[in-house]
Image (cartoon, rainbow, N blue to C red; front, side):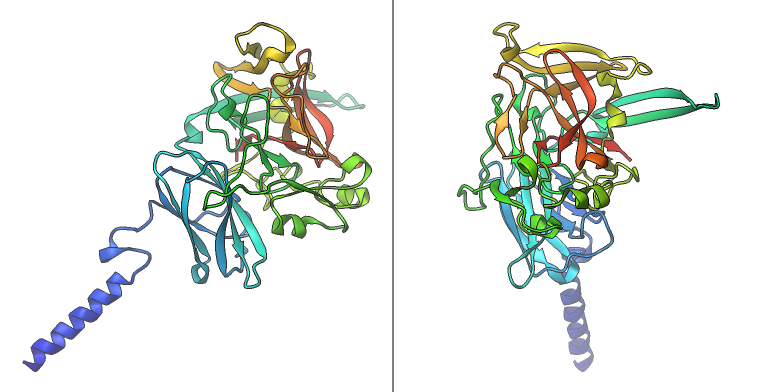
Length: 393
């Protein structure tokens, strides 16, 4: 009898050990999560209806975020995020998503005092970026003063849509995606209407979030403040040109050239792309024109069906090596957070950020397509808020 009781006790203890195995779920064989993401990034692509657990690091680095709680800061579709849990002892966050709802969300981890330590963008979609890419390559030969020729070969695998976009279809407002200050790891605006009106953001309870509240930068290094306040649109300096980073153009010139990997060609800790991707450099947009060494892609303007006036241009289709890249007329949010130049205006354009910094002028390089021209690199104030496209690492 004693032997039977002893064996029963051991069996109960073994069952309890398996049942409490958080990593393996019941029986140690089935995970309680639809996806358990262990590669760190600032953006995670997750499927609607899933329960996803992701590692909460500082960007894509090995540094662990030190936090106590996790919360939904905003979602752009009501009811999409149903629950957020912190597993602070494991350095992870668990998010439960409603079935059948695609959109975007920003989840933040906080310390014991309630201050945001870091933010994570959840791109909730069935989109699989590796299956929908644009392959683009070219060679460029330059000649030095001594007559020596150097040939550089460029090859890029680019997503067919902006970060946060739920479509790549021409004329579809869901192709506008999210908008970022240059160098900032978390999105500030979402412009999903054809006229570019900011998308509303919601709490987990469905209340409206006061997003992109304008505030001046008052310190030389404002990066930590921007991380802790992802819903604030910062600007500073002459007409707000120095943006969210600093109140000093000298600081930006000296410290910010590689925030998005424009120098190192890597995915930096501030890069807003998913793991395995990085912000596209301006060289990846040479098909827009302006460089005689690169043949322009075939381009077709996309109209809203009413006519061919400027204000009816909703975007441009670029045919590149047999694949079509749609660039919407999503306009931009300027230094002060005001919207302009989107579909429906008299001069609709399609600006986007690149990874490169125009450090000499405390600006960054952005692309632009207007009704009459296209540019792959123009210097813009880092306080502009524009969409971003990623390339494969």
